[in-house]
Length: 289
Ligand code: NAP
Image (spheres, rainbow, N blue to C red):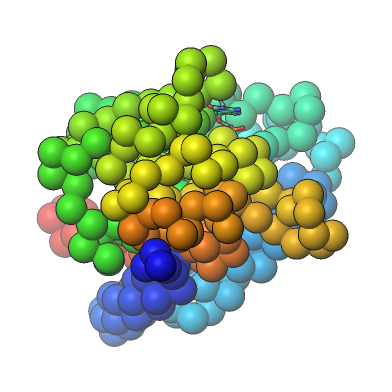
């Protein structure tokens, strides 16, 4: 029987620590504030927004938002970003993505200052993750690292395979694992003999967005399996599932994250932690002026 790596305990611990930090900041006259920027009414964005608003309320962070109509266009998006960037009472900005057709995320992201880029969408922040400079990693990648840290996973010298190479999950996560001295493999849709690559990993991280694609032939005894996927369950109307076939993996591996209740539960807590940290850095910068 595998150990179940629940994300809920991890999120609760992060929220508790953040709430302490926020309360200390408020005591010094600083109210940490996150500003959300949403375009249109995508149900995924709205449900993530509700999770963020709840996490902010639980940690004492103020959360405000601008909602643009899909027809408003790139110029309106950049104006909204510039306004939030210039507002000293805002410490973190989150732009929901993917953006609707006709919008240019890369061009918009350049208007987000690194200090307020709490989900790493500006290419400079992403670059800093690769060079090891200070930056906020994408919340999902950071959530995986926090989960591994919380459960005392030993990464030093271990082989960690990340399947998926997106800019929001796979690539930055590979860099964070490398910084933790894991021996990292990145696999993707063109990788040959994926099951064998997966079986060779001490720590296997599935981030493909393909429901239950990791079957029993991908696992070996002793492995730690982290499932980043969050997909509609093809076998259960209205249900969600990960990229891992949980029923196949759980009897084989040493530890595994559930979906739901795994990595996804931690993301909004990480976001709050980033906002509190950004606010604390503002205070330090003011003190040094
Ligand atoms: P993405 O941008 O679509 O990237 C998917 C990656 O998986 C790509 O690099 C792709 O390879 C690779 N891939 C796709 N099919 C594959 C296959 N059959 N074999 C091997 N590799 C394959 O997705 P993403 O944004 O990184 O998200 C990945 C998953 O994480 C999704 O399920 C998403 O819902 C979930 N997610 C969860 C959270 C959370 O908070 N829990 C947050 C963000 C994302 P190529 O590059 O070769 O195309």
